[in-house]
Length: 121
Image (cartoon, rainbow, N blue to C red; front, side):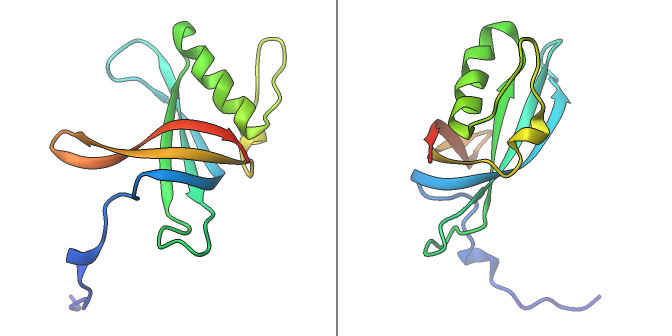
């Protein structure tokens, strides 16, 4: 196997807290391991050309449980995604732009990003 010369000690595992402009680049519906429900795992890409975090991915989960739908609605509104009486299409969100507030939290002994808020671009 070839030796790869790269210093991973300097690589940050997360982006610094703050507001970032992002584009939604993916959405995947997944089954929750902790309950009998589903959630959407959204993949966002940072659109800050002058930032060291430009093009870095962030992830945001929205539960499809009834009591969590207000958060999903707020997310879709910020992205400018339209919905019908009883449905919406995640594909309509791909390419949508918004601004997100990112924080850093410890989870299972590791620091990771968490999106705390979002708003229209």
